[in-house]
Length: 256
Image (cartoon, rainbow, N blue to C red; front, side, top):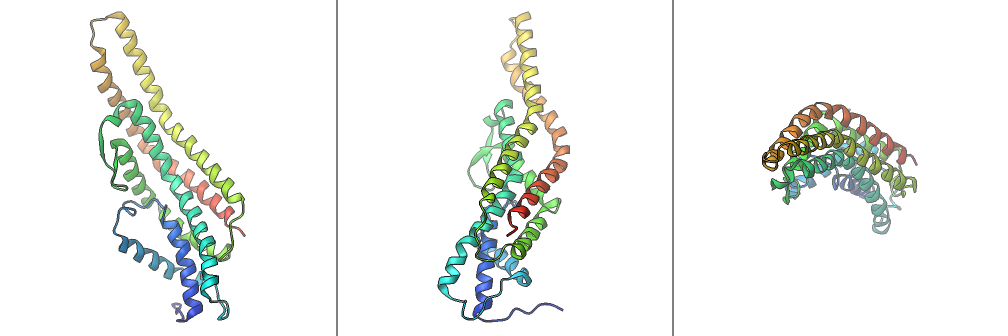
């Protein structure tokens, strides 16, 4: 039997508190094209998701439903949502940082395009990593995991309660893991590019007449493309493993 949403001041306060938490999540969650979409679509999505979480809304008594109490509860709720959204954003930021490291060394940074998310100028490889990572994020069902974490947070972490200091430590750990994963993704390509430079340097020593400067640029880009095709096959597995650690850390942080 579907749940009926009661109409009244306590129900409105519960709706606004949950909406603050959901809005904080959507400020960072890496849905493809979400940040560049129309504001009305983002508002409607936040409201619809808040209504879908109605069974987990906090209960308010009539005497507790006041503007002052609601305002005091909105700030911690935004903080909880921002922590969840920032943790989820680390998942795709690892691949974007790895693409940035690789593009600087392979020469792809010379070709720029418009980033569809921020509408700013960005490297081709970074924009490709952002779009491809967002599609993999949704195809693996990680967008549903975000909703599960939201429902878990409403059950385990009471409305209006501040996060424990361990939340900052968990975010720092996740950021360190993100940097480590980005470097690990770029290291095979960087090692291959170093070998290409060494081989071209030896050829230049053997024959000074060779125009190796014009050969180095396409060779490094072609070698990077070959390795990228191999790394792309591993992206779903790597994304699943790292996402599991991120959502596990978020659930530990949200235990009140």
